[in-house]
Each structure stands twice: as C-alpha cells, then as structure tokens.
Amino acid sequence: MFTQPRFLPVQYTDDSIIPAIVTGVKRSVPPPPIEGQIPPKKRRHSLAGLFKGDRKEEDTGKGITKVVFMPRREYLRFFAKDEKGDYIGSEPKREWTEAELEETFGEYKPNYGKERRGSAAGRLGSMSGSVLVNGGVRA
Image (cartoon, rainbow, N blue to C red; front, side, top):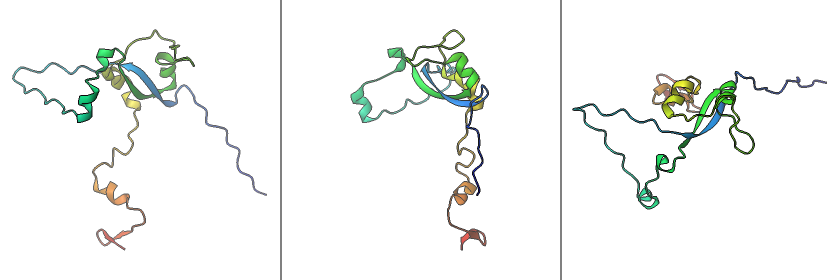
C-alpha cells in the first residue's frame, strides 16, 4: 500500500566540499629563531626510528601526502588527476606547502568533535543510557 519516496541520488556540484588527497606537499619551514630566544627542544625519536634511519621528505624530494577538504571546483583546478595518476588540472601544476594549503583551504576543514574536547558537558553527554538528576547523580 505504502511505498518509499523516490529520492534522487546525491549529486556533487562544483560547490560540494570534498576530501582531496594532495601529494608532494612541502613542509612549512619554521621561522628563524629570534635572538635571545631559547630554541625549541628537539623531538625524541623512538627506538624503531633508529633502525629505520632518518627519513625526511626533503631528502627524497617526494614531499608528504595530506588530505585537504576543499570545494570540488578548486580540486578540478589545482589537483585533478586521471586514472593513470597524471595531472589534468586546469591550472598549471605547482608545488604547495602546508602553510599555503592551510591558508587557502583551512576554512573548509571539518571540526569533528573539537568543540567538546575536554569539556565536562562532552563527557557527561557521552554517557549512554544514563540519566543525570539531582546535580549529576545517576538514576
């Protein structure tokens, strides 16, 4: 008797925000230290890192791979690739740094759960099946 409504499949438009895999991203160079300022401590490496050796993307020239959220229109302009992995974007191919990607596409980055991190409301709201009454006592 009753039928389900017929919804059209979700279509991507040029304004749709999509996750794009960007390869060959160069690390942003930290600014030079100011005179009189204490330099930051170097990160400790793990024992496994000693056996693998010091792998830096600048040494290999490959860069790093990042997932960047952006409108589909920008992906087709700057990062589109064909089935073989060859660049087919409408703009000339260029190298991007982490800072350039963050500056250009940072506004599209989703904030999954960042607003509740460390807050009491986030911890109390995640208690499934619990009802809080009388100032936080479980009923």
